[in-house]
Image (cartoon, rainbow, N blue to C red; front, side, top):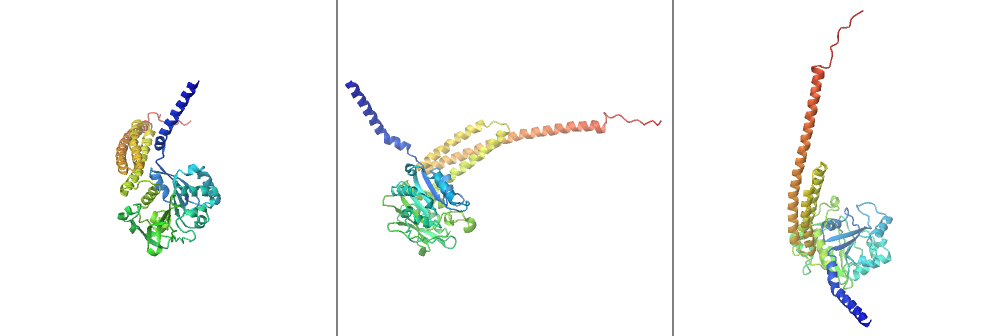
Length: 409
C-alpha cells in the first residue's frame, strides 16, 4: 500500500513539474499578437478616421462605443447607455486585454463609477495606454476619475476652436522616433485648422509644438503614476483637417497623408512594440492589404457572375485559395514586424490575383460567346419560321380559297 502511495505521489509530482515547465512556453505561444483598441466618444467612421485604420491594418482589432453625437447621426442619452451596455467589457480581465483606450471628445458621464474605476485601474497598472481629444464633452472628463490620468491640467479649459485657428506642427527631437521619421516626408509643412491650448501637468513630455509657438504644445504625454500606461493628449481633434478628411467639406482636403501612420507609430510605442525602421514600407504594406482585398473582391464577383450562367468555377476557387496563402503569410509577417517581407508577399498575391482575374474574364468571354451564339440562333430560327409563315399566308396565299361571285336570285 505504501509503495502505491509513493508511486502515485511521484507521478503527480512529475506531472506538476512538467506543467510548470511547459506553462511559460505555452503562454508565449498562445499570447495574442494583435493589438486591441477600445474607442469611446465620437468614433464612428463618418466622424473619426480610426476605424478605417484599424480595419485596413491586420495588427489591430477594435470595439467602438459612441458616446458623443457627431456626423454619424443623432445620439440620445438612452442610445449612449445602450452602446456602453452592449460593448463595454464584462470583466476587468477582459478590459485588460485592450492595449489602448481612445477618448475622442468622449462623454464619460454615461459610465458607471465601477466602469470608470476599471478603466482607471487598467491604465494605472500599465495594461492600457490612453489618448484624449477634447471638445464640448471636456467637463464630463474633468468631473470623472478618468480626468486624473490626462496629461493636461483639467482645471484649465482647453478652449477648443473648430475653424478659426490655422497651425502647423513641429516635432521635438531627442525623443524615441515616434514622430520624427515623418519630418522628412513633409509632415511639419501640413496646415491644420482648429486647435485648443494645452496646459501640461508637471512630469509630462511635450512631443510636438504648435506653430505659431504662442499656441503652445500640440501633443503631450506621461506615464501615469510613473509605471502606468502611456497617456496622450492633443490640442486638436481627430475630425480636424490635420488628421484626415472627415470634415473636408468644411476644412478642405487634408494636407497630411501620413496622419494614420503617425497614429500607428504612437500606438506601437505605447504598447511596447518595436517601432518600424522605415515608415514608408509600413504604409505601403498597409495599403497593399487593402489593394489585395479589393482585387480579391473583384475576382469573387466575376466568378459569381460566370457561375450564374452555369460555368464551373472550381478551378478558380482552388487557385484563389492558393493565392490566399500569401495573404496569410503576409499577415503573420506584418504582425511580427517584418513589414518588408509582408509587402513582398502581398505584391506576389496581388500579381497572382490579377492573373486569375484575367483567366476569369476569359471564361466570362467564352460564356458570353455561347450566350450570343444561342441568342443569334434563336433570332435566326424565329426569323426564318416567321418569314416562311408570312410568305405562305400573305404572298403565296396557299391556304386561302378564292371567293367566287355571289349569284343573284
